Length: 145
Image (spheres, rainbow, N blue to C red):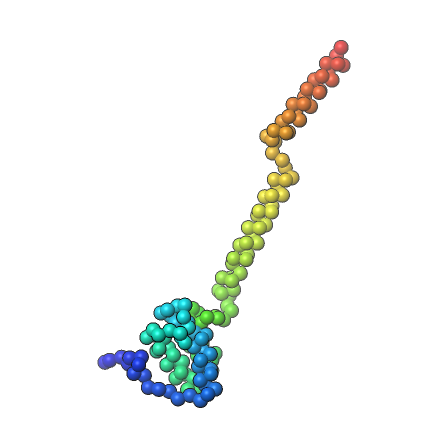
């Protein structure tokens, strides 16, 4: 059994409104082979087959949403340039911002703790403690005389 080649597919006739929908859908669907090209821009065999499938579904009366749903069911969210918002995609979009906010809070907390509690081994503090001891000893010596 031979498979149909992309250039051997029978033509499908569409009216002007359907052709506009078709062109719009071609730009919204990603070529799975090229990955950075839309169906409209790709010359890959799979893209040709998908263009014909989309064209056939439009001719059958399928809505744009039905066609996109069929493509997502078959190829996953990656096939659409603008996937539908779902919990999994929301996490992907929010993840970097949440991580940045958490990192900022941690940084701010560390900075505050450093400014509130100066180090006990800082040179200025040791000098002050030594000076205070000397003054106390000198005061005790004066009282003892």
